[in-house]
Amino acid sequence: MKLIVAIIQPHQLPAVKQALFDEQIFKITVTNALGCGEEDKYQKVYRGVGFEVELLKKVRLELAVNEDFVERAIEAIVRGARTNQVGDGKIFVTDLMDCIRIRTGERGPGAIG
Amino acid sequence: MRKRNRFLLFGMLLILGVLVPLEAFAGKAEVKTSLMIDTLWVLLAAFLVFFMQAGFGMVEAGLIRAKNAANILMKNMMDFCMASLGFFVFGYALMFGGDGALFGVDGWFLINAKSPNHLPLYAFWLFQAAFCGAAATIVAGGMAERMKFSSYLLYSFVISAFVYPIVGHWVWGGGWLSTYQFHDFAGSTVVHALGGFSALVGTIILGPRLGKFGADGKPKSLGGHNIPLVALGVFILWFGWFGFNPGSELGFGDPEKIALIAINTNMAAVAGAISMMFVAWGKFGKPDLSLTLNGALAGLVAVTAPCNVVSPGAAIYIGALAGVLCLFGVLWLDSLQIDDPVGAFPVHGLCGLWGTLAVGLFAQKGFGAAYDGLFYGGGLKFLGIQAFGALAVIAFVVSSMWIVFKTIDALIGLRVTKEQELRGLDLSEHGMESYSGFQIFTTE
Image (cartoon, rainbow over all chains, first blue to last red; front, side, top):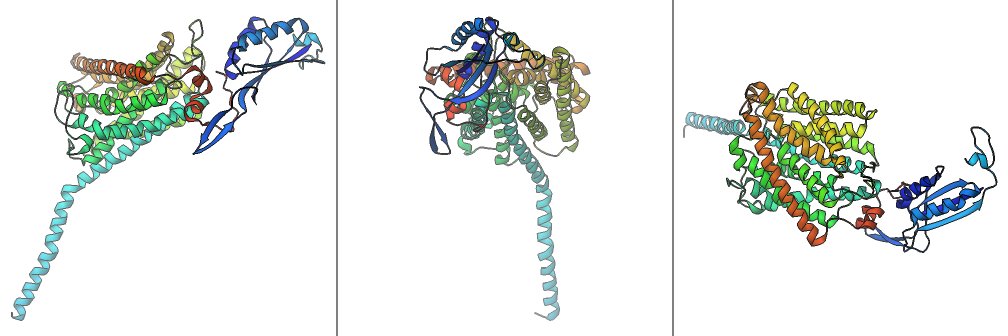
């Protein structure tokens, strides 16, 4: 079992969701995030005072997948989020020790479903 | 002089000295009190209509996404400022500066301008300028979330300085439509249909927002970020409408009439909200607040033309039908893949047209109308005049605004870039965030 964490551009979320759904991957968690990689900072001005902002808005996707779905999930996320521009994002794949379905108490790959 | 004569002389002077000024004062008061009250009323109404800018601002801001809120409010703010300026420099002269069939020519910069009635020029001007601002800001909503700010400023000045005053002149300033007894009491056509149809033209030229229509053409909901603001805005507009409609009587000489206008204004709003709520409930399964709020506005827009010549019962019908019409207008635009983020065209364009036609149906000579409407034995005559006038104005507005928008597009571009639209106009056009510090999901 793997936990896939992806940081993507917020406006790419609908495309990534659609791509994952096309691969029959429906169970995802989405949160707000701030972050930066290689992109440029941008300027904000507030009442005459300018300042630089380096932490840009991102969206963080998390999905728990079984081994046979890992590559499919990665490919789907890349397909949805890639725009060939700096700032497309990153995907992290980590091992998942266990997964428990709260309602039934199931554990393991079956609980990922 | 002898003591007695001196006493008499003093007595006479005393009496004259007291009575004459009193009489003069009483005479002055007799002439001026009604003017005082009329001016007071018109100025108060002007302040109420000005407050409607806040109403429009809140409605528009609440119905769009947070990342564009400051931008729409900036456009809203500038609308009133540009309208005031444009109306001061050109607009008043075009609208009330003479008897030309198409437009007036006297009073540029308000120099040698005249009030067309008994009201002081500046009071009348302020009232009319507030209306001008209201018309201009309707378009901000229809073109929200993807229009360039500099283009908006240009458009706002042009519509306030030229297009609106010309239409206003035709209907209220002694132009050609007024000779036909075309009846638009407070501006269903002059303000709302003008704004609504301009918004339609603008939104068609601009194109839909990114992500509004899917690849299959079905509309997606790019939801408003703050429905409480929309509700606040609608209440402010409703409140302001009590100045918009009753104020258009331009005086308080007929208290019964003012009261009739006020109650009609209220009943139409109420009927619009209720009818929209029930129809939307039936159609979509749940009573929708944002649609209901739009329904109230639809009723208000529709009653704006007929409010001084129809009964309160008729106002209820007019408002109720406006609510239904507004809903179908919203769905119709979606089916045509036209993106109107706040429903500017269904509420102002369609219902403004409906209100104008409703005069031809529900007007009564007993209330002072030129003719009886269709439902009161007057036949189709009034309806025909209303339809003719409304269509003439709409044709002018659509063609002139088409030219205006296309010209602005050719000169400096109308729409922002894709990156600017996705990042949000607050950041890309103004370099600021409306909700700095909030975590807001901006995933579209």
